[in-house]
Image (cartoon, rainbow, N blue to C red; front, side, top):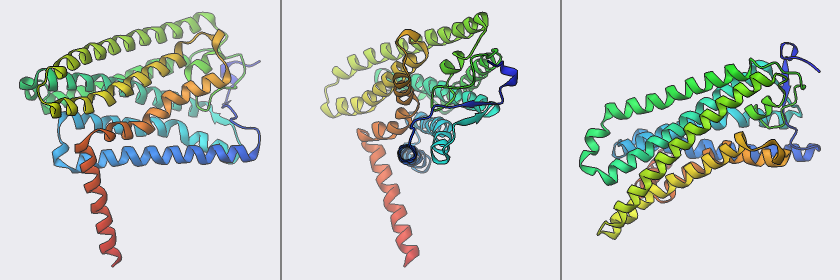
Length: 316
């Protein structure tokens, strides 16, 4: 038994018992991490370099890609290092930093996803007001609000969680420092309920944002189905359906990780759910958003061919 003042480090979940499986996990995480870096890096570069993509939709997509890069860079590198060096430890300060930055990126990302639904709603349902409602200043303000919300949210929860007295050991049954796992180490019922109340309030706000997104998409789909042009309907669906899929996966797995009853909890289920909301979306978002978006695919193709040509010219 120990209290939080004597804890200098936490022990993360050991994903495997044998050295071969640990190395397998390392290479798997490395492949996922590199794929996420490549995909989000390409989208960020394409949007920044191609003036045709300097529109509100792609501006918010750029913000989403940057947040995805930060989110996955907060969790996977430490998990890879532990798997490679056969360790489990993370310092107390390192755990607090991981909680802060992960919550910052994940909450800011959800805010950006909510804003993106509003962007699609205005673009399709109020196209004549698009330039007015989503001018450059309005877009910058909304993006700044999303990032600022992430800072406030992560500060509030990190301060609350790491003020809890911990007397249930220092083993965190997850591959990164996750709030539900740290709460299980608490020995103060009143402070535990305080943080649980904060999480419930956050979940309520998250559901409110999801309702806003759903209502927006109901209006969007009604407007799309009235479009006379089949090409117009295809373009609208190609930008809306990927966003709706990302939001649904993100919110459902995130709420399952933080709000599921302990009676149905198990190490394997906790690991799968956390992996689904912390690693899968940052990795798949570039594929989902580029798969049905012809403008983005053309820009990425132009970017890659330009890089290849420059490489060939330099080598010759």
